[in-house]
Image (cartoon, rainbow, N blue to C red; front, side, top):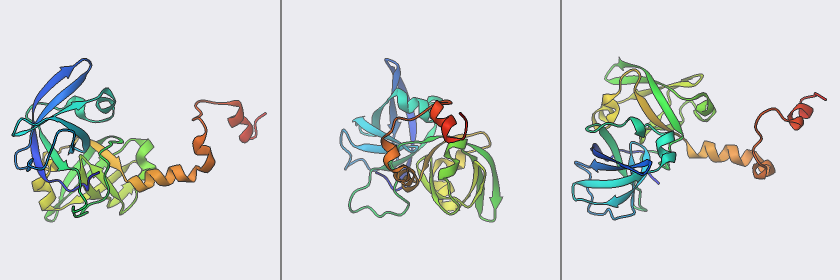
Length: 218
């Protein structure tokens, strides 16, 4: 688990193909690794990755096909900057919100403009995620815990203060930038709870006889 408060900005320095998936090396720059051990988790642009090697100035992590298919990771390039956060401990201040590091989908930056000393970003989420995004609710963008300021369909706006711009990769965003999105955990669990006993039923796909009957056909 994480809080969405970025601790440092690292750099992607190596990518190694591994039988269909990847192994990455991240140089952690200002992130203190003295309390990090093999097997620990680090949120890497919002993706929870397991440390498999600690060369001293950073870490190596394996990336599965599932992660490659559901995050921006396939587009990462050597030299790009990466948001980093170590997993929380019982002593950690929860300054953001509860973040799992399990990315829900990839969004896109639609616009970016000045708003006094802050900057306003407009992000487009996949339509399937729109129901989980609430006005003044929390959302995670590349691992950063942020507050939704406005919603328009599947698009939402964020007002980003200068500190966040200066200390995360958001300063690198431009129109068309792809970003990792993680919606609020509470919204996910609430949806599942509302299903009640139907949660144990297999998911239905396509047009079924039952669906037609429920809607007055046949």
